Image 1: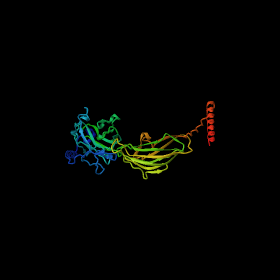
Image 2: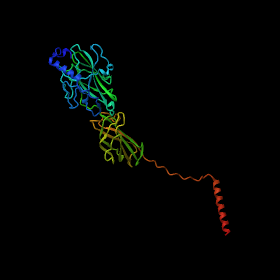
Image 3: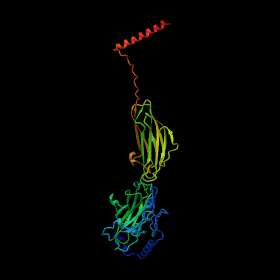
Length: 414
């Protein structure tokens, strides 16, 4: 905090000085070691990313408490020189933070987050660069592409960059620092890029013009994963079916995301010339069929649950519905298309791109067949005796004469 930030910045009251010294001792000698790295899953509370958060109560830690998760490293001085690169900061340089607030900082507008500071200040000459770091392990069941963390922050003095696993997030959009040093509404940034399996880290790069630096981060109370994605496909067992013939459809629902997916309603209403006679369900990858798992007539099912994959990149829960169908005897030949619709639970589930996209209210898939009339073969024509073959008639006549003579001889010998 530079001298111009408040009247008492130039000369600290003695009581404040004593408190700061005491808080510094707490920071250095607190018997409460920093907690083990948290593991983040899609069911984790976003609170875990906030500074000065008390996980035991869900509220904010009090002034002077040790910050359990965030750490700090100095990165060079003065601020007129470039900062030491994040990649060049030794692991041993990362030190603890203390929950600390001082005027003219805004008091925390959040009930579950508070300011934190390294407390290493020595007046206006203490201009420096610094890094605030939060590390966590990503649950193996979470696809890194599904992670989405929305952070709101205030800083003393300026946030110049935000890194995710060493990648500068200004690559995607400028990093914005609060318009005033620390008294305006917080700036918000949603981090969706550059996550990876296992160990992850978020780093704020800040510069401080003197006295004391501080950071207040609150993770907005939203899900830390994007809504899970459900995919639906439909295929027919034959591309061409006779009038009055039978065939089948396969409808497959698959969870493609990192958290539980719910299909609120699954309906399949066939076109007029197709009758759906019966259906049966099979489940895979941890999913369970509805009860009962088979039935007659068109599909009309509700509250179908599809669990996520056990590990990121694996196959999610899957339900396959096989429908026995027939073409009506008086159907008109031509193409018939049948569409199945799945209504996702809007709070947790969205449609895959192939099934309609994230904004679609219903996921859909279609299958088409061509109805044809069976061809009745013509009866075989008799083979005629050749009319232009007199030798055949002579031979036939000779054969008949011979048979007659043999019959006469046979009668005379009796």
